[in-house]
Structure formats: C-alpha cells, structure tokens
Amino acid sequence: MIARDNKLTSLFTSNTEYNFIVLLPLLNVVATVLTPYFTGTLNPGILRTMIIGGFSIYFFAKRFVWQNLALKWAMYFLIYLGVMGLFSSSYSTTYNVYFKIYISTFLFVIGYYYSHVPGTFQRWNKMILISMIVFLLDFIVANAFGLGETGYKGSSEDTFFGGGGVNLAKNISVILLMSPIIYQELMVDKNLNRRWLWIFYIALFFGIIFLGLALKRGAILGFALGGLTFLVLSPNKLRNFKNVLVVFFVLLALSPFYWNRVVENLEIRSDAIHLESEENLEKQGRYLEYQFVMDQWENADLFQQIFGANLFNEREHYSINRMFHTDYMSLLSGAGIIGLLIFIFTYFSILRELYVKVVHHPSVINKRNWAIGAAIIVAVIVNGFSGTITSIEPRGMVMLYLGSLIGYAVPKNKI
Image 1 (spheres, rainbow, N blue to C red):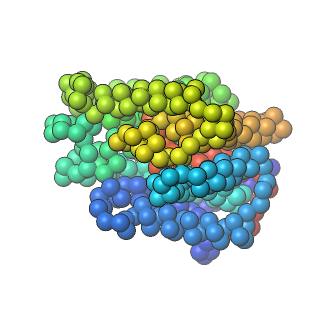
Image 2: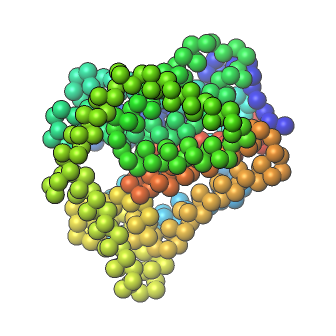
C-alpha cells in the first residue's frame, strides 16, 4: 500500500530536520543561480556544500542503512572515487570535483530515505516546482538588466541566461520530465490551493520556451528522448499523448510572443560558429577528449586501464587548458574501466529497483514512477556527453528525485 498524504496543509512541519530536508531542492537551486554572481571564495555554492556535507556526517552516523542494490552501487561509486583521488597529483583539483559528486550522490540517499515519510514526496514536488520558477525568474531578471552570460560570448544581441548561462537548460529539461508526476501529486492534494496549478502551467510553458531560447542541443535532445521514453513506458499512453498535443497547440498559440526571438538566437548562434567560436572549440575539445583518452587507454598498462590515473585532473595529465566536458571520458581516464562501470551500474540498478516494484506491485503509480525514472535517466545519459558530474546541479536534483521514486512506495520511516 502506498503511503500518500492527501491532505497537506503546508509545506513545513514543526520538525526542524524534516523542514531542512523539504527545503533541499530549493537550497540547491538558489545556490546554483546565485553562485556565478559571486567572485569571492565564500559563495552560496560553498555554503551549500558545507551545509549539506555537514548534514551528511550526521545522517551517516545516525540514520543510514544499506537497504537496496541502488544505494549500494551509489556508495561504492563514492568510496571508489574517494580512494582513487588519493593517487592524484593535485588533491585540490581532484577533491573539488569529488565533493560535488559526493553531495549529488548523497542526495540520492536522502531521496530514498526520507521519501518513506508520508507527505515528503508531495512536498518535494512542490519545492521542485518552486525551483523551476526561481530558474525562470533568474532568466527574466537577467534579460531585464543584462546580467550573466549570453548564449555565445561576444554576442551582445543574444538572449541573457543569468549566471549559469545556457547550461541551466539542463536543469529545466529534467524538471520538465518530472512534470507529469508534479501535476498528479498536486491533484491528489485535497487541500490544494488552486494557485499551485497556475504556477505549474506557467512553469511548464515558460520552461519549454526557455529550452527553445537556450538552444542547448544536449538538453533539448535529452528532453526529447526522455519524453519519448516516458510516452512509450507510461501506463496511460493515450491520455499522455493527448496532453502532449494540448501543450503543443498552446505553445503554437503563444508562438507570436517568442518565435522571432528563437529564430534570432538561432541565427546569432549560426553566425557565431566559426573556428574561433566557443562552440567550435567545445566541439574540438570533446573530440580531443575522446582522442586523448582512447590513445592513453590503448597504450596504458593493464593497471592504468583498470583504475585510471589522475582523477579529474585532466589539465595537468594531458597538458590542456580545460577540464573534460564528457562524463564518460573523464571517468574512464581518471577512474579507469572500474570507475566508469560503477557509474553506469548505479543508473542501471536504479532502473532495476523501479522495474522490480512494477513486477511485484503493478500499480499505476509504480508504473508511472518507472516511466518517469527511465525518462530522467535517458536524459541524464544524453547530458553526460556535455558534462553533469563536475557540478552539483542538475545531477543533485536528479539523484534526489530518483531516490525518492524508489523509496516512495516502501514502508514508512519516522523522523
């Protein structure tokens, strides 16, 4: 029987620990939006790491239990990378990235554990909806005052995307894939203020428009393939297809307000693609990443092929001026074939946990969670080719949500 709290009267309770957990998605997003505007050492991103990292010490000491395969693979991944980092030639570089992975992976554990508590999953969905609004407000303010980055550096006519730039499209794309559940969980709340539905509709349509304006191909492709995955696996295919058509026609009706800007952005980006452009350099960089890693891997000894070398320290290891932007090449190079396989097995084990729930308890909700979980993982795998593990978001929100999908229909926990 699924524990559902259908009478949520507020987002918060009298329990401080629980309220902190409820706020985690918003804490992550606020830090992601604000950090690029700070130049000092102490910034919202550092504070987020300190707060969540400190809570993780308490959690692992007081609450953590090895409960399922997905949790085990997530912890194996953290332990393995932590050990491999000890052999790096630059601890500061390696562990700077490692702690970002630690935080985002810890959020998977948090998602699994606290989603057992009735009402948590519904509250998280509301917080993620608010998070989408924060992203969109950042976008609006950035264009009103010319803040942050444009789609291409040097393109003054381009659209502004705030401190996080067009990479925020990755965050938007995964939240959009969560939207079917967010909507359903809003609708089961018998005490729901109808304003939440208006917030949802505004966030949904403006989020999709944001993707079109950002023209971040990885995010768009991940969203498209993830959405297709959901439509194929969802238990209510016809209804969901009708909903997609409704969204399409509403976007079509709204197109006079944004389509010219999308076309202008596309033209600006097309003009910016030349040998010195940022995008072309990125393309070359990703191609060179593949060449660097494959050449090293083929010529390395068996030990280095298995365990890698200089975890997340590609600048020094390959004498280049940037970190790798591809998750898979970064892990294969620094953590070897073992690190890459553990990373892949973690996602596979999450899919397995969701699918096993469908096999043993084939409820509509479990089937829905399986479809959304698979859709999100497809999107994350696609985004992995442009990099997700070197920053807390969007991986942090993704891992929190995937953990909550697994834990949502299992026996209750108490705070």
